[in-house]
Amino acid sequence: MTYAPRRAALLAPLLVLVVAACGGGAGTTPGPISPAPATPAPAAATPTPATTPATPAPAATTPDSSPPAPTPVGVLAQPWATAELTDVATGQVFTIADLVAGGRTVILETIAVWCTNCLGQQERIEEALGRIDRSAVAYVVLTVDPSEDAGLLAAYRTQHEFDGLYAVAGRDLSRALAADFGDQVLNPPSTPVVLISPSGRVTLTDFGPKSADQIVSLVDDHRA
Image 1 (tube, rainbow, N blue to C red):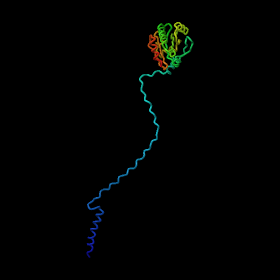
Image 2: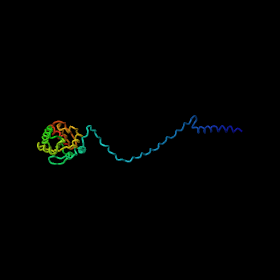
Image 3: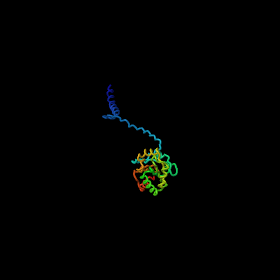
Image 4: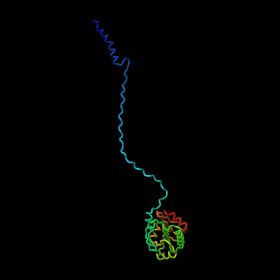
C-alpha cells in the first residue's frame, strides 16, 4: 500500500511549524538573558549620638611681653619687710609689711647720722611730704651704721624736727636689704631710697640726691 509515504508527507509541514514555534522564528538566535537589576538594600539607620553639653573653650589671652609686677604677697614675705622695727620716737613696733598691707606707699631711706648727704635728702623728702596726702604714705628712715643706737637716732630726729618712723636697722635687716638691693644700699652718702607701693611694686631709685619734685612724682607713680 502507498499510504505510508503520503502520511509522512503530511506530517513534515507540521514538524516544521513546531520547530519554528519552539525556536522563536526562523533565523532568530535568542540573546543572553540579562539578570534583573538587584534592588539595593535599605541603608542601615545611623544611631543618633547622645547629646553632650559643650565645654566652653577657655578665653584667649594676649601674651604680655612685660615682666609681671611683684605681688604684695611676695613683698610681704621678704626678710627686710617682715623684720620688726621700733620707732625711736614713740616705741611703736612695726614692720614694713604691716605698712604695705595697710594700703600705704612706703618711702624707705637708709642713713647714718653723720652723713650730710642723708641730711639734705631727708630735708627734701620732708618738703615733698608736705605736698602729699600723708595718710597714704609712710616714711621709714633706718640707720644702717652698726655703731649707732636708738638713743642717738632719737636725738638726731628731734634736733632736725623730722617726721616719719625712725629705727635702727640692725645687722640682719641690713644684710637682707643688701641681698635684695645690693651693697650700695648700705652706703648712706649715696642716699639710697626705696619705694614700695600697696600693690607690691618695689623700686630702688637712682643713687644720688633726689629733689622734692622727684620724690612727689615717684610717690604718685607708686600709689597703685
